[in-house]
Image 1 (cartoon, rainbow, N blue to C red):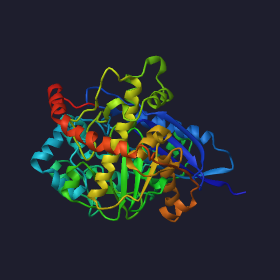
Image 2: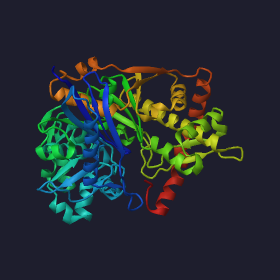
Image 3: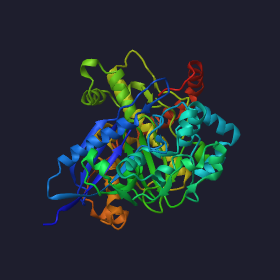
Length: 512
């Protein structure tokens, strides 16, 4: 009997590292995960250790493979990862400096240089990216200035998914969806931008070969086989940016769709037929790039601290003897809509589009002696809903593409109270795709495309068997929430902006 093919997807995420095996219909067969070890040496700094990440991924693969029954065979794998964070490698393939996290703020000085010497509009017209500290090119410039020895030894910059692909197969390449988050890719020509790389003063040979997502790159080496348990010769396919892989798994691949990917950060993503590079879009903080689906682009906004705000609240506000997700939901459900006049602004790392602002800070507003933890918990969820609605509606208006369908994925979709508030604020039904790990599934689908199991993304979608559920708005609260949003929430950022800038300048850093 011929064994059934399995596809493995790996997700290198901000919160967790995950590996999962799926059959060709998208059903999970085995999975494993571990928390992503992150180090915070200074305020505003965060990093990962490359060897530690690789060893944990190898361990996850061993656990997944051990759980696979003998009537299956591993047909291929691909890797998704957070963007912007990269591994600087030397000519022997060893790393020369730790992985600077995507949300690390040490590169603000590079942003200020671009602002003064080049200008944000020119950068956006080439890359589709607003000026932000997170982009990889800024990290490479920082290494050149502050770690010259590491910079001189560096011969290649690989995104985290590319690094794991390299460790598995020995092949160095990057796909377009991750490359477009470096601030070094020309989005119109889909090639490395000679102009921006020259202006940055970094070596052009640092940037690897560009490939499409879902392209067969190589095969698991004997050395990687010994470490991971994968059969030597297993096809390794190019993956992509985690949010885009999630969009593929959720079927968000055409204009009019909007993906709300609710994780540590919350990505709001709309597919586009072509980039829309008007400068006001970049000034608002929205980014554009290449989808993992061929000949498809996207615009993305979102919340930089969505699930991270929830984690922060549980750690800092809930009592130490009852610090659980269920306890938080119970508390929030006890408070009335409107949270007794309390509003939460989820800018715990930086302001979200359309208010991109590295100096923004989070806030609870409207406190009184009547307010308790319950009110704060519900205000937390309402603030996340308001902020998401602001980001998505402004984004759709800027690209002149009406939102026809909102699809939700991610760990945050387990929070039914938050989903009900979001649906009511938006006054429309939300479609929740019931897939346990959309990002690993999206990576697995790319593996299937790369080995020819699926013809293309549309064919892969036809094979999937997802359960879905609709979250309906509460008609009795739509008017109430819309009034709260328009009369209060939309005014909060501009009201607090001068104060938060003063605070950030006084302390000399922006929060992580």
